[in-house]
Length: 179
Image (cartoon, rainbow, N blue to C red; front, side):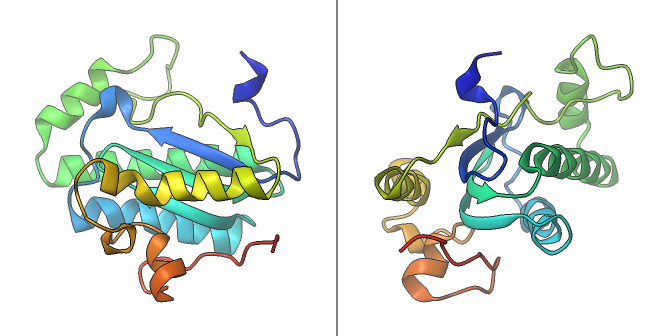
């Protein structure tokens, strides 16, 4: 594994990318988005996750975050959301999605019939204010670049709303530790 994709400093703030297998469009309903956001909320409240920025799109999420054990926190997040998304797909009879999750399962994974998330979270250590600002602008402009909204704060599932509108109703975030 390349060192740029590992968490090298346990106390650092990281830019993370979490991607659904084969870039499948999973977060397309309020129910599936709630699964992802509720799990982030839980990680903030119970696992020490400090979340400074996020965006949730139909097939991936970006975070700027830190935690006492960030890798374990993200593993827990992905495990919980995967189970919940599989249950949702079963309950709503999304057989095509379950079939695709089964098809994407890695051969060495023996404890599950499905794989929802791609391996890893591609962590990049934030090194200073400039990099922090650059990653936050990237995160918040993701829905704009895709043509979903005209301005970042119009995307419901983004911390741009927290920063621009002081709207913490979707998901509360933590105050930045740097000026």
